[in-house]
Amino acid sequence: MRCNRAFVCASLAALVESRDPVSGPIDCLDGFSASGAMALQWKTRLVSKIRVLAVDRCPSAMSALEANCELNGVHWRRVRPHEVAEQFSTDCGSGKLKILTALEQVNSVMETCPFDFIHLDPFGSPAGNIESALRHLRNGGLLSVTCTDLASLLGQQPRVAMRNYGAVLMRVRCAPELGARTLLAFVAACAARCNKSIRPVYCLSAPRFLLACVRVERGARRADDCLARSVGRLAHCRVCQQQRPATSGSIGGDNAGCGCGDDAEGGGAVAVLGPVWLGDLFESDFIKRMARHLLGSAESDSLLASEDKILLKMLLEESQCLSRSTDSLEVSMPPFQPMFYISPKWLRLSGVDLPRLEQLIEILRSSGHAASRTHFDLTAVRTSASIQACRDLILQHSTAAILNHNNTTDAASLTSSMDS
Ligand SMILES: C[S@@+](CC[C@H](N)C(=O)[O-])C[C@H]1O[C@@H](n2cnc3c(N)ncnc32)[C@H](O)[C@@H]1O
Ligand SMILES: [Zn+2]
Image 1 (tube, protein in one colour):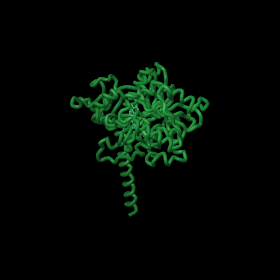
Image 2 (tube, helix red, strand yellow):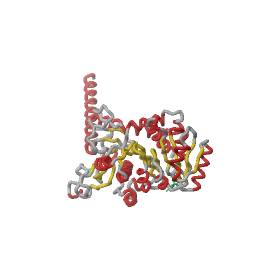
Image 3 (cartoon, helix red, strand yellow):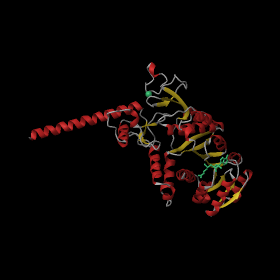
Image 4 (spheres, protein in one colour):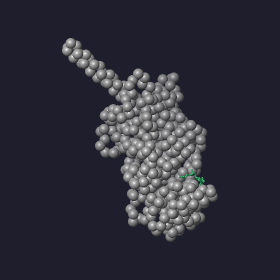
């Protein structure tokens, strides 16, 4: 969870950095604070730039939280929900290290006061708290959500996924990314009910949690556009794992574009999953700012373990997924076509020497596809290429390598026979 806290703190720091300092401190809510580790990290790092309310409904967690404040030299004041707005303006505006605490249900606190940054980290699914948080986030604010209900989001418990997120999911090879996209589609639908839209700034998939952070913007028309352009169903081929946005949303009317289900035997090859988020997952400038906070500070070693630093670097690379022909950071993709990742191991190319990932990225990019490593799966590449295109390129490349090898061997044996 150290990694989770470090990324959340860095996203708050990046938000603070992007705001005009004259607009004053930004209001932050740690909604499921437990012993307050997250809230204390924010306050001790960002001091007078933020005002913090730490909430937990459990009395023993609240006692631990307040004791931890004292251990860290941070003043605290226990408030009731209706006192938050007033106490923020009168008591927490100075440079003093002080946070507000509340022994409450988080939804009842969110009803009383608007925030610029809300982090939700419940045990289990955050689904029941997301709409309330979105309703009370200010325009341009960030909602950050940590999910530990991975069995449902990764498709291992499809009925729970349907209950909590209203989504059809199943076990697929891109499960971590599909889980992130399912969560984002759910967040977008909740935002639309509040006449708001979302833009993901990053998603982080780790072994024990999934973290997503979105920017929220006000406006009913924006909400409509967000749903229409970025949320939809996905046709997923159970045979080859190809996926692409479904057109009709009905089973049988869609295909994943791979042809596996074309013959009569292949009926049922395609499953229609979702709703999922079909738009971009990353805002690379924001992640760069986060990386400066995570890697550039004197305390960076205490913030992130070395494997988490690798995760961050990969996230940065992934957020800039490029093709060789692209010189800007924008991906050369048709609009609203999500990119998934492909592992060469999935391609069932027996007898073929599979390229290393860096080589495969090079091959894909030089053929005009966007490609990069992906933090979702360290054995895979994120790419705009279809599974079939990827397979063809690997085959071409391995044939070219064999021909090259044979030509070189022939030339060498010719030279040696001329020498003898
Ligand atoms: C997973 S822990 C939070 C961990 C914490 N964010 C950290 O970084 O250490 C979840 C906490 O949420 C609290 N909680 C659960 N439901 C709640 C609710 N509806 N309102 C407020 N707190 C709640 C629990 O008491 C528990 O302390
Ligand atoms: Zn297929």
